[in-house]
Image (cartoon, rainbow, N blue to C red; front, side, top):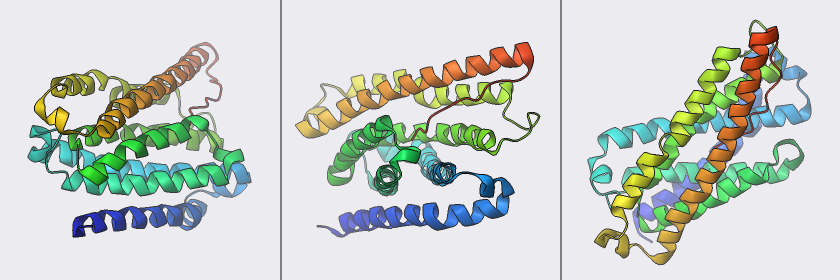
Length: 263
């Protein structure tokens, strides 16, 4: 094992324990001091609150890193299959630690935050990341997919406000719901053609055939699996947004919306 692989392993392990610490210690301690409403939540709501707090932090961290790579890492952008994966592997290692940490929490607190689709999402992502970290392949595509994390803070923010039960004048209103839906659509649905056009451009080329068969299965199979779930979540969020808009226009009292937790 070369030193960089040891570094990647260390980053993944550190990430795992860091996100566990954020969930069990940092989020409860901070939340109690930011809003008194946290103390009035049920045990299940506190578990989901802490889980969403951690997922929001992770999304912002890796999302900003993704943007930097997308705009400034020429090696990755010029060679999407075998470009220098150093920065991408570092970011993927952080996400790998988070995904394993989150799955552990999901199984342990299944009654509060259990979701079979989230488990499938995490497993599909980890399957693809195994090849990114182990073989250093497909750095552009791995980085592009992680841009979807930017939808997570918007979805979580709406859940936080709804759960706190703020007065209607402070709740996420129709504009907030539309903004969240549009944001989710832009980073998870609208970018699909760009992603698959770039994938098609690589398919059948010499760099493509250098990729191992397992790597190709992980790349194409995981992408399709993740995007099927993105479309499902988009449909769910879109329906909820429609209900909020219709109720707001009719009675100025929109119903609660269950957005689901996405990564």
